[in-house]
View 1: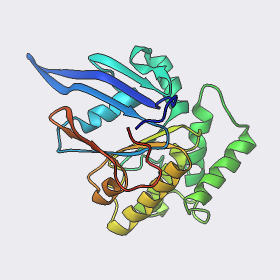
View 2: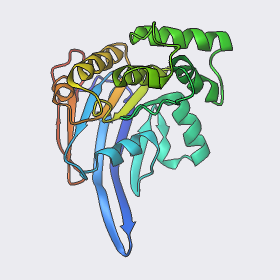
View 3: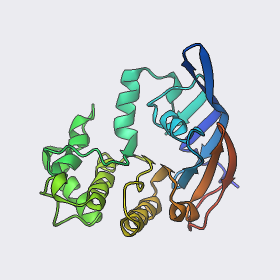
View 4: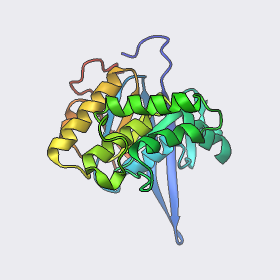
Length: 242
């Protein structure tokens, strides 16, 4: 049961998403409704083309629904302008990419500092931004790598730096689309450990994945043909549930 008086971090109501391909209209999401509470680690699974990434794009405001309502961190993002969405996203959502998306000319440290410099209302002074970036990189085990360029470290180290970057502005929500899909098994386990630690600290994580280990220790939402076909709890301690 959901805790009484707890405001969900994500509320999705009857979301439909359609695309036009030539003269044909394709419906990708077919009336999705979903509630996610603060501190949940959620895996979204399903076959290719089922609507997983489209649902993630709805949650982050990267794409908008054809119909339905999406409220994230208390904000009705389905009604926001692009400018307001960009400002909201920079402060409220940390995005972890499969292929890291690190700026190659910047050190890992400056890749993590950059999001703090790009927000409309800066939370931190220049000194605080550097100190926070250093602390986050130390937290993900990169204290001795932070001054290197992305090309000088491994893929797993780049992904850990990407997690630190996603946390830079202290967002309540982190999302990832196959963030372990480009990593070997051992490195995937390290990243999964970081996800669990971040969730234990009260952040909410929504991860599109094919990783069975992640699905086993999280709430699993399975998408089939644009609909939720399964929504069940994994074994992670602290899951709040419905």
